[in-house]
View 1 (cartoon, rainbow, N blue to C red):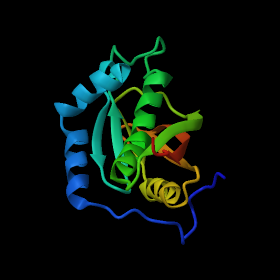
View 2 (view 1 turned 120 degrees about the vertical axis):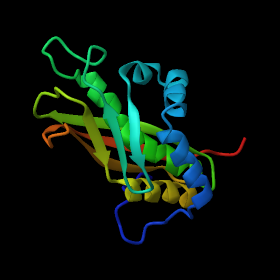
View 3 (view 1 turned 135 degrees about the vertical axis):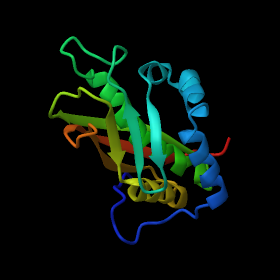
Length: 178
């Protein structure tokens, strides 16, 4: 059974603040995060993706505007924006999975995007759906059933201009013991 984690009585995860601080430090470290991207997401490394801020409710990521991310129309290529958008939701999901009391698999099952203005400067993507993501992970840990959550992330340039918005649907499933 698949459900969307949005009700007030959804399960919650007990957060180990020391582990959370350690994960936050790794994700925002200007040396460690690029190494992680190089090993696990080389295109993200090449594009220059960064995690600006992260906590249990919100994540901000950036993608620079420049020769590595530019399309022929002198704006940030949609694929580079997509990577930064996914990272803003995926980093929250990774933190939730890492702090979960059981082993949980995560996977994107759907995505939709809208593009507004041309991105001609660094773009910052903000996802504020950490509570929903953590609730979905807690639900799958408690029930053993898969849980899904649809989350929004919005990209802005430094002047506040919205460049794009993405909805990602994440699926979480408690792994069985082997």
